[in-house]
Length: 78
Image (tube, rainbow, N blue to C red; front, side, top):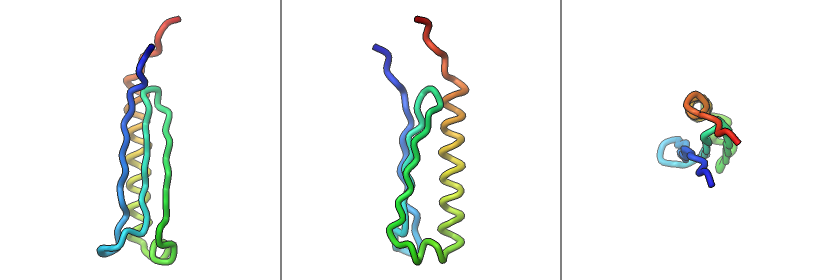
């Protein structure tokens, strides 16, 4: 059985001391990517450029993690 190596990360998006959203991702060995964005406080999140910029930065990091995993992936022969 082959293990599927993965990278997992969860980050809160804050405005002041309030958590308005969080983004979680899992990047798998073959480049697969699962991302979940949860908005806890929609009004504050959507009214904040800072929160939207944070989310964009986190998405870029998730996509880069997926690319990094794929770049080192070696398919097994059957």
